[in-house]
Amino acid sequence: MAEYQTVYGSLDNFTKGGVEVINDDPKNYVFSNMFDVASRSKPWEKVAIGKNLEYVVECIRAEGVSEWRVTPHDEFALVVDGEVVIDLIDPSSPLVDPDASGSRALAGEPEGKKMGRVTAGHGHMTLLPAGRCYRMSASSPSVVLLQTIHGPDTIERWAEICQKY
Amino acid sequence: MTDVTDVTVLSGEANEHGYKPFSIGEFNFSRDEHFVHVTWPSGTHVTAAEPFLKALMRDVAWNFFYGTVNFDAVLGTTNHYGNVDLFAGRFNEAYRKAELDHMENFPHDEIKATFTAMLSDWTNATFDPFAAPMETGSAYGAKSGNNDAAVTRTRVTAKRMVGMPDDEPLRTDESGYPVNRAFHDVDQSQPVVEVEPGYENEVSAYNFFAYLSRSDVTWNPSVVSVCKDSLYCPTTEEFILPIIHGNDRVEWFIQLSDEIIWEVEDLKTGTPRAKVVMKAGDCASMPADIRHRGYSPKRSMLLVWENNSPAIPDMIARGEASVVPVKF
Image (cartoon, rainbow over all chains, first blue to last red; front, side, top):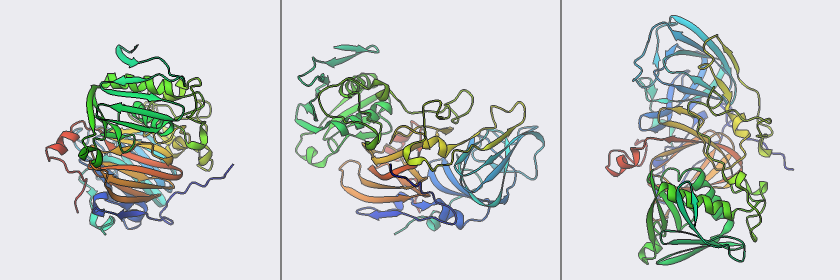
């Protein structure tokens, strides 16, 4: 039986594919690479690499300790490189309108009950529950993909990250 | 005639090869040892049994999916979410010009029951249309038993996130999902989850890559996490996507491991538009006016990301939403 090797990308080692145009504009495919994006991002920037109307997939370079954030809806954090620790707090009073979109940064640690902690490694997905607060930390540069809705801190820099020609 | 869940399926006596013929509207389907034959008032079509059954499997399991499921360059379905078009040559420029194309609309339950019965009757015991080529027997030959255990599998559709209480379970050896032969090197360790009392239903994490490495099917996007209408639908891919998917909305692909090459054609004519080579970490949209087919040389992990809003096809038709997700 053949021995297969699963090929992943990482901040230190990634190879990009691309759009080979026959009769089209490559910009229609909004083609980027998450590790390329993260390698050029500041820690904790929330850079959209996918957008579908109000929904986004954000690429986050996790490095050091993030601010505390509160999310009005469920979000899902997938670690695609490195290891990220996620702390969760149930705020003592609502901190965000449940009809809002995207998470909000908080000034300092929120008051409330500690819910728990997740130590997520490569390929691990964590629920960031609606109405709750979270903080991420990474002792070495890591990458998180966040399934969420476009929010006040979502960064769109398509022309910088996507194939244009 | 056979009644399936209150819907009448039109089928006949088995032929000399053991297979029943089926009809719906003015379409007639039959198979022999090697081929599937389709007729409609203005034309005929023949295709090999294996790719036909693989495409039929996806159409049934996905409930006709988003938009158009082309079985090949001639035959396919378009989902209108409650009713479904069955067509021949409708999205083939040559068939249209020759006026050989044909399309009929059917209630969802009627065509679903017909396709389900056809899939059951035409799939032999050793063939699994969801499996990679090296993991299944042959689709060909005279009728020999059935494989209903395989062809009745459906998409996983988590309500919130896989692995949570009252949601889709994780895959394990014990539950019948061993690690696939191509993913023996995928780390199976689980995240460390420390939960304070009372928050067991909210503090949750799982090894998503390990979950994918235990998938027993190919080319079957299944929902693992739900953010309102934003659905993560990962899938493991090997060999060739058995259908050519025509989008009715923007769809996104995020390549999590290995490589897939996508051939992209114009949605309505089939004219080639681009080839998209995706390596691990690449992210690309599929516009809403194309159709695509993927080629995965080695079993790979693909995250298909969908916006499930039922309003999108009409928004695109009215010009309120673009066929591309971003303009820059």
